Image (cartoon, rainbow, N blue to C red; front, side):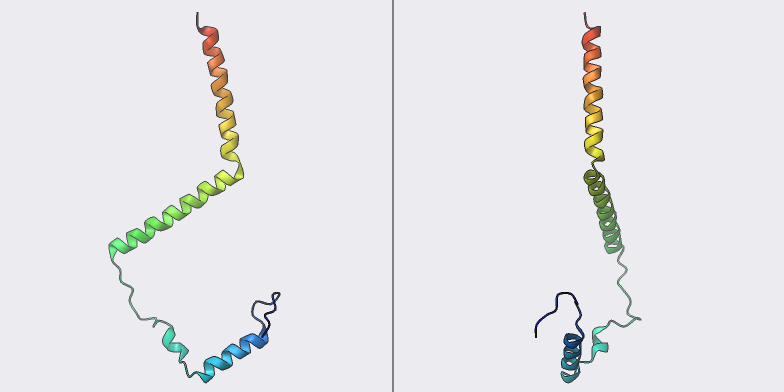
Amino acid sequence: MPVDKSKPLALADTLHDLALIRASDVDLSTLIPDGNTNVTEDTGVLKSVELSHEFVAETRAALRAYNSGDMQRKNVEIQRAQSQLEELLRGLSP
């Protein structure tokens, strides 16, 4: 069956897939975890997940700053100030 690129979930394909699932006698409710299932609350795992989230957030912020051009502008400003200070130092040297 040809896939229509403009519609990611074409009705004909979706209905075909649903018919296959029904015919295969798969109980979809068994694939969904029970709401009463307790998640292991190991403090090491929770801390690791928290650190991972912090790392991702800081990485995204750093990439946003880098891609915005702020770092390059700051670098130019710092180099300009550094060259001015070096000229001032040369002027003060005997």
